[in-house]
Length: 496
Image (tube, rainbow, N blue to C red; front, side, top):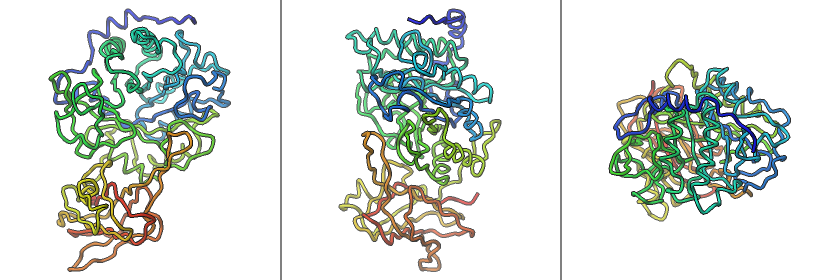
């Protein structure tokens, strides 16, 4: 065992107990949650042994000497985060494989036993203080390397985990957020979350704690509820408790997202934190071949959607095997800020324009298998990303009626794409169906074309008009598609 000094633990713990921000029944955010909401926008950093093995979820057997960044530069990561307008960095300190990015006295499966011994947790936390950003940590509950995890007595691993959390929370300065993952691998009771949560709050009371897949359909259930379905207060339950915010990566919450959830007969206020990859593919750890990034249009629209309604967003921008964020991804996420969002650390996050189509009506020329309950036109404008309109033929059209008294100059379409899984069985690539289409508005008793394209729609199509329009109906007319088209969401935005 490596010797590790946990300096000042008793003193810090004693002081922090007095000012704890533990979750209590409430209908509005407490101080910890308000701080979470105010920072609102963070950069997720996945980096570890998986970066070098090419896996998303390795099994804890990848040799420690596989971790070997040739130009490790954690300062560069945080500079990119600063220039991109992020308020905090959320670092994956230990993923499901159990490999730790700090020198832990509890394991030899860490950076200190690798060819490059830099304490990444320290380097990133120091850089965050240097550049004025807050620092958060991701820590996997599931550990596929640590022997005590497989012991019949779950307390042995919880002791191990709390020991590591003490290392993280007592040696690296303020930590704004703790993001737990991997809880599905064990019964909820085995995690002893009340004990773990209390330990964290003793050390750093204002740290917001969240556990992935937070919400279930009923007490004691393990049936997860999609964020899209969280439309009624006090209908669903918390399977992981205590917790300060909700998680389900990489799902997008409904525009009408609710905040009240039940546990033990009480109602608790919990914001939702979104996770999005900068890559067009759903993958967290960087791969050998550079990936295509999401368009600035899509990232901008996701920013406004995900940071609205007292929710938050973290965007994954992972370093590669050199130990640096690739220039193409750094340039892109910084351009999102400089060209679109114009974020300032001392100002509130910007808010997007109102959706005129919210509360409107939609009709379609066809619905897949005539199943209105699953694929009806209304799902294209319901404010949810996990529901969709799906047509039954390739030459389909969608008509949306809304308040015609307000002006607009922008239409946004999120096409539902087919997902093609990669060889790792985890990451996937999105494939479009719509190849050509037009947008019409209802004017003087007839349809007038205001936009037409013979190029694939793309994952998120943003159409900006030089003129300001008023109408009470708009039509998306699909001219050609590889398969019957489907739309996750389409909305018309009011002129600011």
